[in-house]
Length: 330
Ligand SMILES: [Zn+2]
Ligand SMILES: [Zn+2]
Image 1 (cartoon, rainbow, N blue to C red):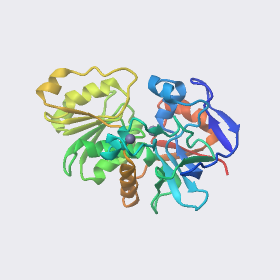
Image 2 (image 1 turned 30 degrees about the vertical axis):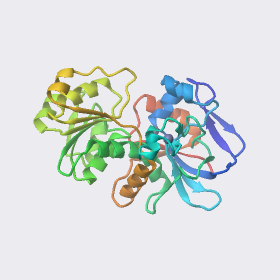
Image 3 (image 1 turned 90 degrees about the vertical axis):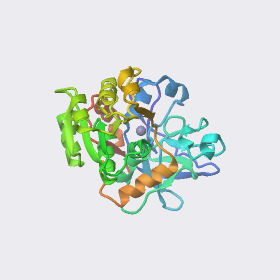
Image 4 (image 1 turned 120 degrees about the horizontal axis):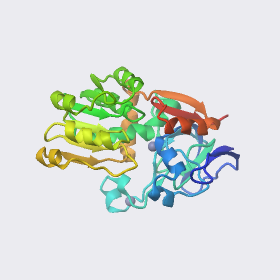
């Protein structure tokens, strides 16, 4: 089979011909139909995140937004970032398996979906509902579930106002999900193209933060929740200053540097600052079901797997609208 392989951090992926993987006990062999190119893949490949660098196995097949078909029974399934969790620890038992300390991350600790085939534990593959194609479903396994879970954790209710910082792969899905849940949505970005897409996704208001810091406009507007998907420390400062008193700031986007936040609005405004990472298997199922019964769709562009290094270049330069989904040759 063909696979795009990371052999060394900081180097381009290499297209190789290798043996089809063999499913071990409790595993299934999946014929990959589509795999989203997530910005995290670029960070892992570049060796930007120390902890991931230590956890990653090399050579590695990246890719954790996988959609395909189980080879033995043709069931349509996908594989998320949370490739395996122990099922026995306090987090797994308490319905918070994404915190499991024994978890295995797809496309980091085990080979992922940048290949024609991959294996995954049967307990952690997730069925794709009717009405979603492989290309539509793939980005929901990371980008979709990540913002779905963050919105859920924020407690955002019908009729409440949410500001989404960053209208990229995660942000444009967050806008659609928040709209579907009956919220009023403002989007903030530095790119006019992305703000245009935000409006197409149903944002009620957009603010161009390249022109002016958005906090004053946001305070007037009255955002109850700020969801930061932008990997920008400045976006977090604007979120803390711009959200309403008593509001909630959801930490999702990961800037390379640590966050330096103004303390007065946090304490004086009694803000809640909440981190959120991917989601549980149930969150993935709920995200897929919500998409299948609504118009929520990731804006996708498909590219052949062979183009992965060009795709990574575009991700590094911030030139991707929505998600690029890689499709292996058949
Ligand atoms: Zn991802
Ligand atoms: Zn566990």
